[in-house]
Image 1 (cartoon, rainbow, N blue to C red):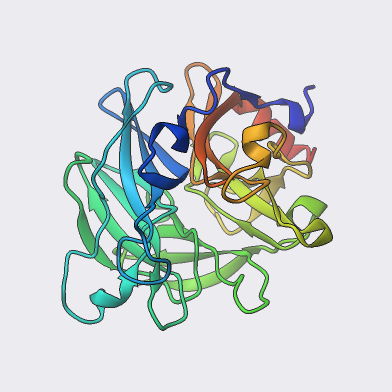
Image 2 (cartoon, rainbow, N blue to C red):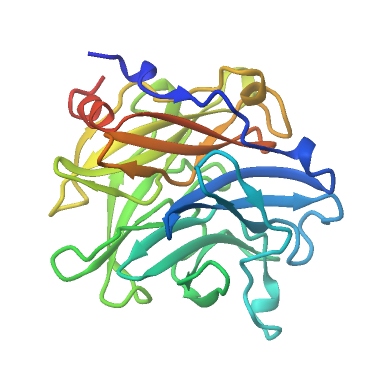
Length: 317
């Protein structure tokens, strides 16, 4: 059996998207991937050199990247996510990054953790699209501080579910919770799922991405943070949730799946970071395609056996 840390292999073309190719951008990072009309779509977080930190809506933006082969991407120059209003309180919302995209039926729902100027944040803003050309804001669906809320791709026992990531503000640890809704807007039945610090690589916080349905359970790619000698390092791992009771953890990787190892993962705008906002399951080829951001400077791809990742969760490797 291949060990957890050896399952994912970096694509030889990494980095796929890099700030050196976009001189007007200061940061490029943390893609959220989906398949749309046989194309790979990434919602990529970017920051322009002209952005003013903490002020205005253009601090962090979301751009669409499109690829026919999943490797060579064309990055849009237009912002895709916005509050679509000039009225209070929407004028307070800014920094539209780190999206989580989930397809439910024929609609792609996007949760964006947005900052609220002068208030505790981020909060999760729900929006939707059907074509990745038009975007419609729906509602704010989390309380602060909640970063990384992720929808399940179908109803479970007649209810929508989402994974939440409360905490990680003012000395709090970041952990994973779950909540339920009848309509994607009104949420309740909050329950804890998993706390950080079950292994060294997630000692400070963990966070979810949109669950992937498998015959063994809901596979959730997670990030973990460890702070050795005062410098944060981000890792990627996975957990497995019960199909009918998704608040129950039935497996997890004790080891990480991916750690900063290459030059582009060690050095950039934010050193020692690999960070995923989702993954694509290729069931036919038993492949998980993990698009991830590295050091807030580029977008990369690692891929490996989907069944091997599931098995390493079950066996706690």
